[in-house]
Image 1: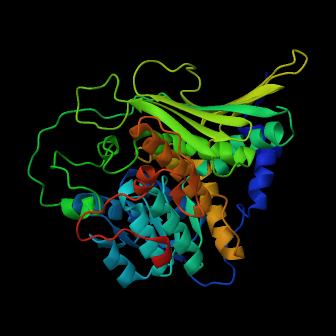
Image 2 (image 1 turned 30 degrees about the vertical axis):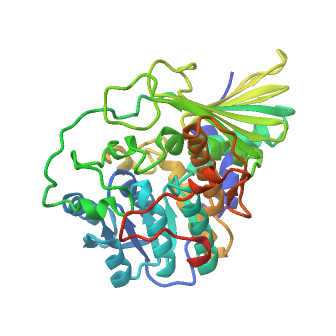
Image 3 (image 1 turned 135 degrees about the horizontal axis):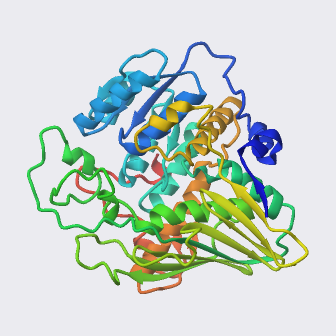
Length: 455
């Protein structure tokens, strides 16, 4: 079996050439003086990880951090001081709006929970910043439409953290297998996640600690009784703050397939599922779900289970693209081309790691080493798009389509498996008033839902 390891990749990979064509190997904003003025909203695990990847590839001064958890905020500030060139601790803010007003950052990274993404992104755009926002971009469809409208209105570049588009081994697989036509006609795709990642405990209600502003953290979402710090996995297990495993993990794989196959909006979406096995805890997201995203002569079928075993242990979170001449299977860790013909050899693609080039990666707490190179390339692509006034590879509109499709799958499931046809021009579900009403979630008192025509 032919294999592409790290040395092969660095010597002559087409993926490296593609990344270079994005300007990922030397973007330096030659016309400006001084470091990029950057702020981070949401100082938890992945927010810091994104920020540290940006620090590795650009001349950055982190001017501010915002988080409603004072302990997490201080720890993040101390970490940033050890990573950025100036050695300074950034200004620390409980409220991101105060950060935007006082520090006036040029670049804002958003690593907060999903229910805050839309408001924070739109406010950052209004404040004059380019934005890097984690996926999924929103918790409802109209939030996403408003984010796209704001990015276009204010002329800023928004990169979404769907960094599979910047993952070297997947770029290689796309170019060598998909773009070359090796698969022939493609008429079926499967995407899946079988990770046991659904937190499902029963912690007791308790007083909110003094260092945590739970009201501010909750923001526009419903105010649940406080039952412990929500940061690590706990908030994702509640539909109040996100869209479950489909809204978290399907977004990545659906987005990857859409990029590889040049797919836009699905023509219709159907989904079924629920809590079939893990009934003992507080979690209210599905533990089992299937969805069909339909395109002309092509179905993309999603499946997740947070229990049991994966159907393919080598690919527990993955995509499988089926063509008449072969199959391409891929994940964040690897990819494999399986030809139909016995005369053609399979091709294996390895994940690129950069431990030697970035040794600080190895000691960074909770880092996803396999994703670090992709995120670095993703950051550079974002900066290149800003520099050259082009759209980044994971532009907000692409992130919106992938996010909204998964949200629509959840709406379909909640409505008993109804088939939904979303029209992005009218921003309605065709012929379905009940589903259309679910495109906007009600906001908590004191917060105003963003609308595309009022950003």
